[in-house]
Length: 428
Image (tube, rainbow, N blue to C red; front, side, top):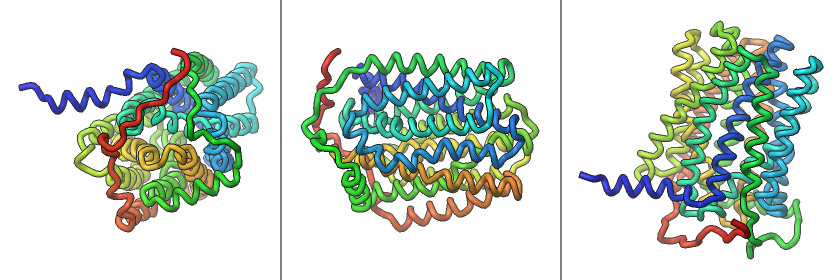
């Protein structure tokens, strides 16, 4: 017997692929994520080899993350003013230039720690505008009722890159060294820019801002977030996860080399483990959609990630550590998939970019967690550093799940209530 319902769900999930500009954005995002996961692993290993200091490894990632806090206050207003497409192209060009500079410095034998810190700050600044622009662009391209389907496809591409990125980076480090890795990053970024240049120029929207008032726009964004419990809860959990849970990635090279006795390839496998789990997580999310609220998927996944991370911190076996990172990836998929989806589908078209800008600010508070985990690792070791942050993270997330019913119960918009089509583009 043919499963008509299942066929209908698959067709709905794939509907966004019928939009040419969405396909371009999706492919470009996949290559963009691939390059980012590669670069994060390579720069961590490069700094560890240059300095042999967990603290300095954490510090370089601090410089990568602190721009999100600095620029997050204005990113939404800037995106509203310049448009998502223009911001995406500018930031992709900056990323390409930064990768090229690091590659040339390594190739010439002149690379120094301060240069890696500076270019990490540049890359983080580009990401602070690029990520919210790419996310807030999706409802315009596919319509709000298809946003979660578009995000599911985006999440699938992201998780595949989360597997291939660290794994390929580990192999390239072993075979060609850091210079070979950055050569590949330059190629990936150049191809991404070429694909994104093919996106149509959008027609002007009726709700486009008439005047740019950054301070007022930022304050309006915060007031809007505060008045919506679903978005406020997402903001708070994003803040907690980025301060207490995700900083573990800073110390992954330290875990690989000093705790588990692995080289670059082993580090790449550990990095890929989280992506493998995230792919399983997407399948679980697909099965739960419509049966469990998006808010419960988001909060439950965040708690699962934190609890599993605590177990990972106490493991000294490579195989067990890999298995735990795979399980953590399931939770991270729920967090990453529903984080943006909740904000995008529960915010008005006028406030969407500013709500995403507030989310960037929450992510941007993560540098404090990176410095803290680096300092703890330098004093007490990497396992203790990760464990003492993961435990309170799990408790706080569970508390927010209980005491914020507006977040816990939030669901996807009803397709019958929103018939708005994507905007009309100029060009093909």
